[in-house]
Length: 346
Image (cartoon, rainbow, N blue to C red):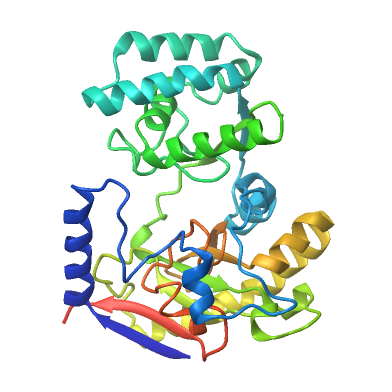
């Protein structure tokens, strides 16, 4: 394993340039780090296709949190976890609430109250009532993403109906999720299904100690008839790619890299077994063709905690953290030796 230490001034300069560009074009991303949503043409130039390996935009379904929730809950030793559907008829109300937030920078009390009271009156609301009692503390998320980017408390626990609605309606991540869900439902002539997940609030969760692990489709390595047992880790990056990495727990950087790599290797057989035995054949086939990434948290005792599963690939919406899906394609797709990427200041 090669530890790739990128000088932080390089990353910081790129991040500043990207933020400046976003003031002109809202959806501008870094062109060097954490890239995503590349075109097929871009990645084909670096990584040709073969009879068994193709570039495509992976569907979100195989990476939905609810599919993996039993495994994640078991790995994190959760005492409880809940999945409750938000009625589809609340979608338009939430979109109006989000639009008001974007326009005014605040969520009007009467709009919030209307959504909360409507939700409380539904069967889902009655299931949520004993959970959102103002005392219990939850980390909330949708099937694809959490509203952790909400400036109105995305980084603190949720305890009430209002907490949940405010975060969902002021989060661009949640907005994107809801938009994608609506689009998929319309394309497949299905009713919109919005799942709200409530996990116990975990104080040890710290993005500064999280890492993204890349697992490409085995066919990228020219394996003609791959099976799930052919999955291999190609790369690992610190999750908060735009911040200087602070080496935790009085460890050295090499010790952190070793612990994360060994821990990720230990999780692979568990993930592979779950794919083979717990997911249906269609989902397993998609994962085999498209690969996956998984995020982990390094704990003080040296264990890795599984956080979530995400898509893989240059054409996916999954950010490559300190890598670039195109420029680092031979690493990320498993053709070059495995790399562990961090950025340290000084």
